[in-house]
Each structure stands twice: as C-alpha cells, then as structure tokens.
Image (tube, rainbow over all chains, first blue to last red):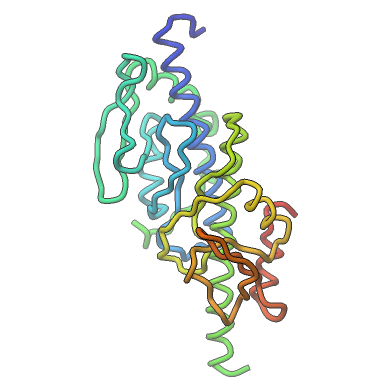
Length: 136
Length: 118
C-alpha cells in the first residue's frame, strides 16, 4: 500500500513509534500489576530514533490521556522530530518539564491510527490498564 | 508481628516491587533493540533501585546486563542507590553497582516471583 516515497517515510516513522508505544503499553500494565502505588512510571521515549532508549516519568493518568488519541505520542524534551526525509510527520501540541506531546500529521497520522493496537478493541475498556482517579 | 515489623515489611515489599517494575522496563528497553534489529554493545537502562522517585539512567554493556538477568535476585543500580538492609553489593563498575537481594525476607521472594524471564 505504501509505495509512494512519502508514504514509505510516514509508514516507517509510524511503525517505529508504534513499537515504542506497544512497549509502553506493556510497561503500564506491569506498573499496574507490580507497583500500582508508584506515582510516576518510567515510559520509553517514543521518538522516531530507533536507538533511543531514554525514559521519562509520567503518571499513568498523564500517559493514558496522551494515549487516548492514536496520533499522539510522548517524547523527552529535545527529541521532538517534526520532519523526516523532508516530510512533515508531526507537530508539537504540548510541553511539560520532562516530556513533550507530539501529534502525528498527514500520512504518518493515518499510519498511527492504522497501527493503533487499541483500535480493534476500542470498546473493550476492560482490556486497558486501569488508572486510579487519584492519579489524575 | 508488631506494628514496626509490619511497617518494615511493607517498606521492603514496596522497594522490591519498584525494583521489579524497573527491571521489567529494562527488559522492554532491551527488547526494543531486538525489535529494531539493532546491534549494540551498550544500551541505556533505568536505575533499578527501590526509590520510586529515581529518574537516573545507566549506560550498561549488553553482556553485563544479560549477566545480571541470569539471576532474578540481581539488580543494576546507580552507585550510591543500593539499600543495605535489603540487598548486598556484589559487583561494581564505573557506571553501576550490581546488588543481590538478601537471602531472607520478602525482597528476595518478590524479586523471584516477578522475574520476567521465569
């Protein structure tokens, strides 16, 4: 499907970030199971750089808020990548002290929606990590 | 068991649970390298100490990381982040300290039960 060069770039970027996001979903589930009282969980930076393994601390409520939109990603400050191979793939929509919220745009946004592993079972809220009200 | 005993046990359980979670995070980080077929000699992991406010990361050789993971009671922490009443230092390098859960008590039990490679 992605045979246009721009589509290939968008696909690669979205695929990489979906991989990081999947890891963060697992981390969130592990936090729920192992340390539910931990106020801020270490999540892996979701920037497009595959070698990046930096982490940032967010409450589970903060991560869930970002995660609730399949085109939104969280990266550490300084890792905001809005353009890849000359293509505009993302924009910054929020900045906090220790993390930046990004939104995938254009073809990358479409790929992010397609790769969102929550989409198929979106109505199945039981499959999502539970976030205590107190975290919000 | 007195109140003091319960409090101490709770504290040790909380430390052990935090360390177990940080170890799970690091397993995910290592899995990232495999997912992207990255051939690396070192990678950056989170400190696996029991302090829930610790945000430090450590550059560790894959070989050293794998050696630590062979024993579910071993954890990699930043020098100075070891907690003497629940763990013993069994190795040191420039970047990290390798700690082992003490034989007795709940810390070792939680470390073993939450071993992601078990």
